Length: 221
Image 1 (cartoon, rainbow, N blue to C red):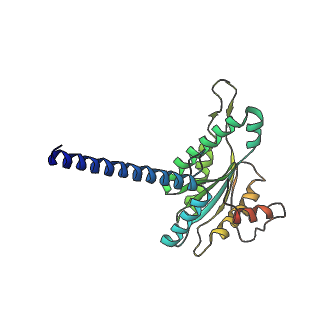
Image 2: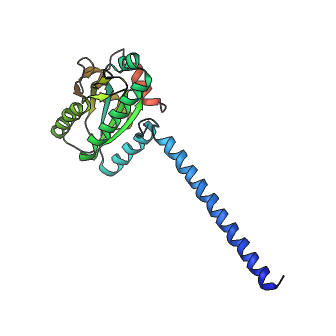
Image 3: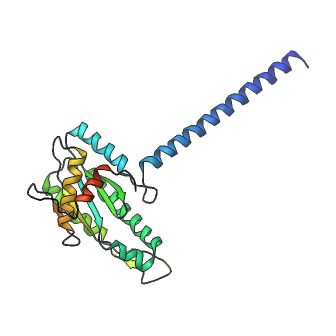
């Protein structure tokens, strides 16, 4: 074998080794990106989860100094699972998530899924009138008919939700805004399909005190 042939073979081996190394690095990068995505998103709805929502809130506070929070809870969702099964329930959750995500775009808001049938909306520095009109329109959009199972004509639901709103405030912590929104949500649940703005005179009841602690500490689905 000539020296030229040996040199060509060595160079080809080097190129092949380099290509394999690049491929391994690419795969490692893709795996890391996938793991990061799973750590920050809800796999069913593909919305940000609680962990990413908190990061987005903190970024908004750092950039703008204020960020509103809406806790939104689907009304009578258990009846959907009981009547048509959990797969139908997943369809409703995914549909609601898509509608919330679309509703958020015009005002630069962010939709996230906290757990179960509870969603969170992060609002930019909008005034109360803007948020009021937007919430009314958003809840109406959510209630559009949803086909839960294509093999049954009667498997159609009109999702309805209640929401508690903590308006944007300067220097409010993540826990502060979650607490305020949850207190308002408890008031809203008394009238299904309603939304309530938090007011300082509102007080947490004994029945939702445990939820406040859970909201402040839980990071799971």
